[in-house]
Length: 172
Image 1 (tube, one colour):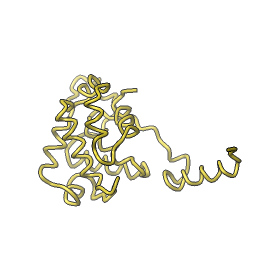
Image 2: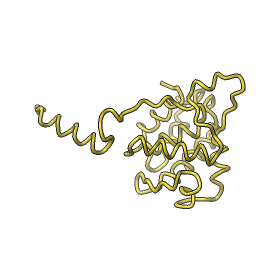
Image 3: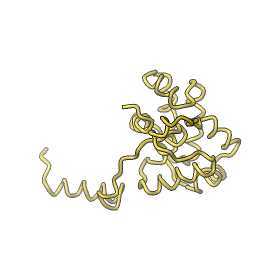
Image 4: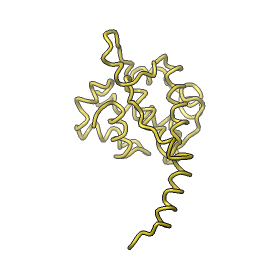
């Protein structure tokens, strides 16, 4: 099958309408110094405009007192990472819309018909159960099939979001 320039134009138009208002809105995130911020970004980036993702990540940062620092901040002498335990402690027993209101700017975004807020908590719980709580833990075990499955086993998450999550923590 041959693709025409009209086909390409339709694809570009669809990408712009579904992903960004214009190609100028495409951004490369600088990564995050704290694992929960990378997790929230990776989950909320699914079928979303990145400006909405940035709003949710910033809201989580405020709600959890986790500074939205880029990966480069990890080299600062006094840096101390907020790990997944922080996210799980803050989430407590909340779920659904109450959880979204508490930590995620009230976002009702969904993936695979689930609120992304609930997906974040489930992914954090599953990663913690595998011993991954901080970025160094993830870097050490990112190639471990059990750790990958902890992420991809969450309904609504898959290989692409796993790769993006890893890239947000500096793992190629």
